[in-house]
Image (tube, rainbow, N blue to C red):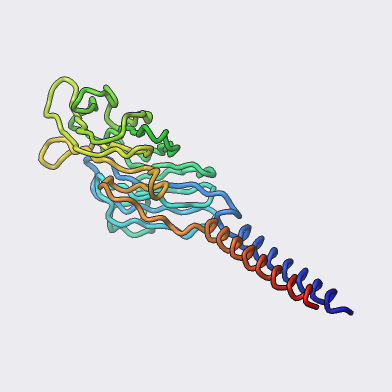
Length: 284
């Protein structure tokens, strides 16, 4: 066998191995092997004490999650979950996991979709509601915001900017508005009970191309407590789910990005190997 034929055979084997490595890296990634969606949990019932929230998959495909001592007004960040059906249950804070839940519901997670599962209403008729979150980013020249009304002291609210720009009118207790596009920038959001009452003002900044949920809570001092949460953000992590403090999120590890990086590295190594081998063949 000539040196040239032997070298070509070794080159073909190396290329096949690198191609296999790239394929395995790309397609064995959990992000590619199965679809996934996002779920976050919230306690939005004003007169309900703290609870322990349980999330599990009936098929036991995902390790059960437990959130201890979740109090009124708390909202988690999004959990990335494989597609499927999940059970969410609330028990009194500190109660054994074997006790009967106060309330339960199921959420079906579809690929690419996001949901907020919230305990809403008064304690007497407490329920778990699954809210469909629209995390599609608006155009860079707009922000997108909705209102989640969790104040029992002000059963109906109007929400607007201090400049008079309306965000939502007549928002009833335990309801959620649709997302609305508004101009980004600095806002002084006024939350006012219909029929009179103390108005609460929330100074905030709505980022261009980002998505928000404005939650209206009862304040301990008898007033209203508007709270802005980032649902998704053009610059940073998409989705988020944390309180909007002006700081960006941390980009989570992306299996797909890692796979593409490794595949690119494999291509670079392959190209270099081809050049070296070709030079050796010409020299032979």
